[in-house]
Amino acid sequence: MESTRSKTEVWLIGQHITEITGAQLPSRGDVLRLFFHGHNEHKKTVNDSASEVAASVISFWNKARIPTITEKSIGRKVVDLFLMWKGLKKNCTRTTDTQRKKEETFCDELEDLFDVAHPKAMQLLTIKEDRAFLAAQREKGRRGVMAGVDKKIACSIKCREESKSKQSLQQNQASSALEYDELGSSSETESQSSSSSSTSSLAISPVVSSSNRKRATLKVITPELSSTLDRTGISHRSALRILNASQMSQAG
Image (tube, rainbow, N blue to C red; front, side, top):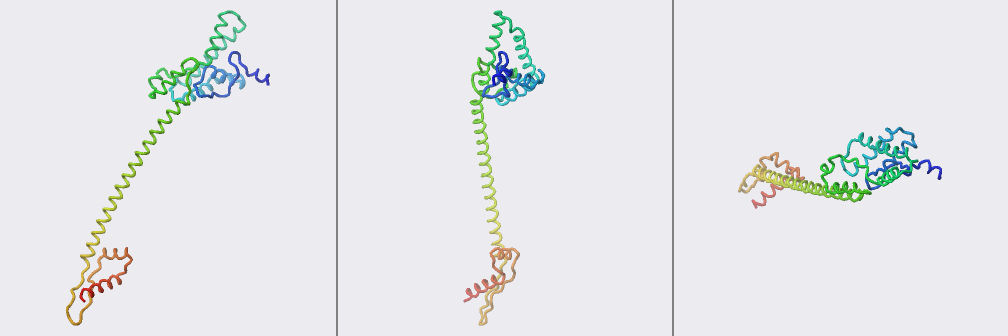
């Protein structure tokens, strides 16, 4: 176990990592540990390992919704950081105060932000909490975490979405009510028109006052009246019977 750990141990850096995790933006140490995982363990070239690290870094920054420099530029910054480490490693056998101070400064900065923000990031960020988060991450030791900021943003987005959904629902309900009113008005008008038409079209012959009274007769059944009878389930014969009975009752 110790043998395996010693193989993955990097001078001044510590153990390799296979991915960048946590609730903070990547530190300089995170970047180098991930870089050495690809460069030492998987024997990748400096540029290839740097490119993979750049992709991981930019993905992490995107989660925080902070604009960055290009992925290619991030890759060059990774290479520069590696070359800085390499220069110190080359002179690690020196015991001068200058060498010692350089190593101490390098180690002290490992937990600082590996800053790849766009030069105008603060102007481009429209959310106050995002600007505050970036400023805090740039402080010594990267103060603050993404979780709190993401929670506020998510809450803000959720509130906006709920407001939009509520407005859409109210508009749909208002539209449905209007359509219902128009439909009801149209049906009522049609019913009144049909009733008026049926009444005017139905002609009953006058009652003949004689010893031999004649039954009432139906002159014509219009299409509108026929449609009304069909809807109510009353046959034409039944309608005639009702009309005749009514006429006889009046005559009596």
